[in-house]
Amino acid sequence: MITQPLITKRCGNIDPLQIDSALKAGAYSLLKKVLDLSRLQVIEEIKNSKIRGRGGAGFPAHIKLMSLYQENSPQKYLVCNADEGEPGNFKDRYLMEHDPHLIIEGMAIAAYAAGTSRGYIYIRGEYQKSIEIMKQAITQASAKGFLGSQILGKDFSFHLEVRSGAGSYVCGEEFSLLESLEGKAGRTRVKPPFPTVKGLFGYPTLINNVETFANFPIIMDLSGASYAKIGTPSSTGTKLLSLSGNIQNRGVFEVPFGIPFRKIIDELGGGIPEGRQLKMVQLGGVCGPIIPEYLIDMIVDYERFEVFESKTGAGAIIVIDDSQDLFELLANISDFFAHESCGKCTPCREGHAQIRKTLDKFIHYQACEKDLISLESQARIMHQTSLCGLGQSAPTSIISALYFFRNAFFDRINASNCQEVSA
Amino acid sequence: MQTETIVQRFPKVDDYLIEILLAVQNNNPEHYLPEKDLHYIAEYLGIPDSRVSGVVDFYTFFSTKPRGKYIIQVCDNVPCRIRHSQVVINTLEKMLGIHFHETTSDGLFTLEPTSCLGHCDESPVIRINDDVYTNLDSEKVTKIIQKYQAREEKK
Image (tube, rainbow over all chains, first blue to last red; front, side, top):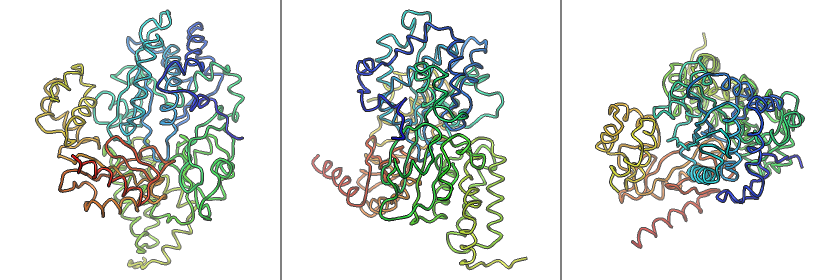
């Protein structure tokens, strides 16, 4: 088997609503171990593991931990980003609903290392079941003394609270998320300063993805050095992949970094149903690049997910068969981002409307060659000048399609009734 | 339950604004936030009405207009679209005689688009209030709506 269940090893084998069932399977044993180490020793293990953030950007986790550790502030916060709104991603929901205590244990370990006593899990409002399970898990963990004051009799306190989103994709972006946690509209802030310096309520804040926190107990169990041997030298450990689309077996799979996409699609996904052919794959979610079939021999790692500067390594793989129309999909994606744009910066707010107008010409067979040029420049401007990750990554599907499927654009132009007189 | 009772369960701290709005709206049988409730919440937290309105306006979950007893949210993002969510949408529109953002004349159903529900491995997906329905086709979604309709007729 090409799967390697580390953070998902208890999923399906324990009752997420009964802490005793998680405890029997070893939950919180690593927190006990960690509390006997010094805070710097914990950060050192994380550093040795070479783990990078699992939310998409892939920033080395130990650097953020160390920054927070070094901040001398009366208050510091720990935030778990469970605003998994990127279409095509559902691995955080899977983890929360199957092993909530692994996430809580990971957060407690990070809180101890960084020296924070307050934490939040911000879960998108669409995930009602996850919210209920996480809330119940926190109550049970507090009753057993794994959260709260004087944890396990040590001089360490950590209070954790669940907060719900209310239907906003952009709140998955870290500064928008912090604004939302403060009870405001989720409009991003200009950075720097970064959250580790000035975050929630103006205090230093460490934000990590659900999956990143879930890895901390595993690292403390295996040791950082052993963990670093899993995967590839630059992308260590395992990755949760959300496999969806026109494929036989859809679902969450945990694989070590370095497995080729084709193996995942064929062996785990079981191939394309209904006798269809694979046409393209969208990586990372709808904010990610669309790649052609001939590229799926490349391996899963951070560099590969970064096609066209899109840091979309949250691990979604959307498989698309040959019955689908490229332009309809690009328009669908554009509509999604137009709706989710917060409207604060001009390139993102106005860019979507312009891009959609141009795409419509392709859909309705009215495209000219100059429309291809405008589409390209609209997408690039939006990518280069938007304030936050939403606007920067929204045109990735278009940029990648223009690169890999350029002929499809020319074919459509040739089949179009172009009304413009060329200069 | 009275809006006041729900609001007073929360600390008088303004970062609870979204949590309070969600609780108040969920308690409203028509799933919306009347103006007097918004004003009460602003007063309770000691913040301007404009701040409350700004938040209500920003987040898709909040409505300032009455909605149906059952809110049917349909996902049409790529993982659902390529598994024929359009068939589900067409079936719902035909069956209920409404389009997105409309409510049936009996006040039972409101049809809305939704962002990804995170069930892409079971797409296409809809959500009716807090219940998620997966792997839908025209036949399946028809049966689900009929079940809700039958439940209401019994009352």
